[in-house]
Image (cartoon, rainbow, N blue to C red; front, top):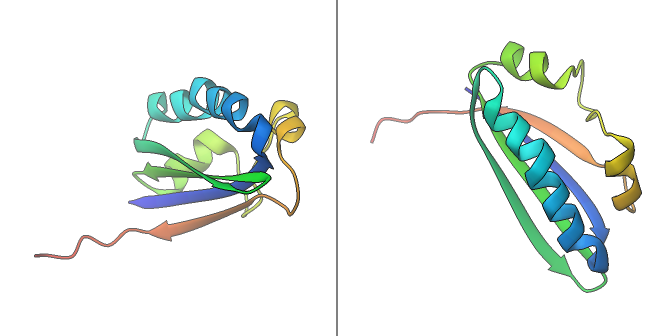
Amino acid sequence: MIARIWRGWTRSWDADAYTRYLVDTTIRQCRAAPGNRGAYLLRRGESDRTEFVTITLWDSLAAMRAFTGENGEQPPLSADDARFLIGGAPAVVHYETIDWPG
C-alpha cells in the first residue's frame, strides 16, 4: 500500500474556506477513486498561516497515479488551489506502508 502525503499553506483567514474546498473536492474524490483506501485532512494554525496535510492511502503507486495523473513528486494543483496557497512550493511525498506483525 502507498501513502501519499501532501503539504501546503494558506493565510489563516483563508483556512476555513480552503478546508471546505479540500473536503468537497480532493478528499471526496480520493475516497471515491478506485484503489483508494482512505483520505485524511490535517490542519494546524501557525500565527498568520495555516498548514494543511493530506494523507491518502492507495493499493499501489499505479492506482494513485491513475487518479492524480502524477509522473513525479509535484502535485497537480488546480487554479482554485493556487488562489488559496501561499509561500513555498506545495510538496508531495510517497511512502510504502509497512504492515509489521504485532
